[in-house]
Length: 106
Image (cartoon, rainbow, N blue to C red; front, side):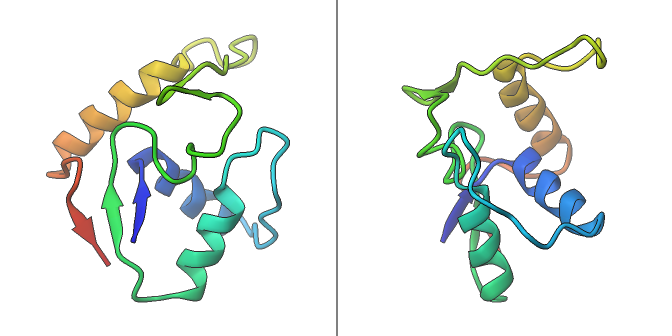
């Protein structure tokens, strides 16, 4: 089972849809590359919606006690959410789509 934030799943689908097939380890140490490998390698994997830190966040150097301390460069994207607003975006979007933390799908 993979714990995943809704916006992380959308990020993966977007990257894959744009032709991304080589998900490599990131300097931040997050686990996008290994989560993608598991999702693509196991069509029956169960995804558990997580509105807090998920399996991608877990090993990241910016994951401080379950909160992201990374900053987003807003110089070119003025309306970009702050890292912790990503949690608000995930929970609001999830609620609008009938998802809740802990729900599963495969």
